[in-house]
Length: 317
Image (cartoon, rainbow, N blue to C red; front, side, top):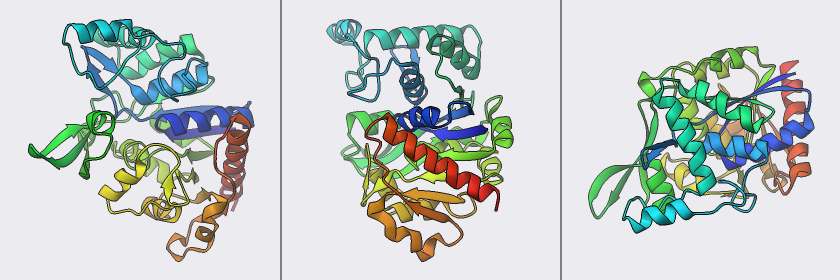
């Protein structure tokens, strides 16, 4: 069985851990969001790719869901002592090593896809991890604040401002000029089906789909998604603030309708949102209700198994 996923950070990584348990023999390819990437202290940081790599490789901080386990912060404190910024994005010492190695290889001329493959040789995540593109695509956020109307990098809006300043729009800067990374379109074409884990539909899945060619390739396959919204609230993070900016309600049904039947064939919602199984706006999308909280690996594996089952059912229709 060949499965391809489009994934962001924490939600995607935890779903993937369940997917590996549910389908240990499957060939899994992950197309990761790189719109969150940012240059800090001269280093190229890939938050979503690293979260997937660390989680599946056994090095993640389980308490945070991101960053390294057993972390220390000597380098960050020394940078602060020098007055070097920004001080709102914390990097641990172990994490710094990853970014130093990545930046060194990028500076030597390797594309991000090749660098990601090299880093995964250490972590052995059990999946093929591909960035959505080797090109520079950055998610920017249009906001109004005391400085007027301006754009900020997504990480500043998310981490420093905690998404409390309403976003007027999200811009995948550079996406229109980008191309899918090597292997991305082939992984989509070769997959038995595509899964969308409970990642942010706007700034994770949405940005991946903004790379020319990816949305069209995905739409040609059988696609099943898992709702990131349960009972009118995001399971994790501040996806509701992102959805509000594009005029989408924070409900399981509204997120599925946002993707639309042209992209989405099946949709898993939590039992709290069982009414979505009969929602008129989801005509053309097969909706199933089941518990969706990923409380542990076993629960995540059951959700992944349900997604596989629905995808196989729809693929044979």
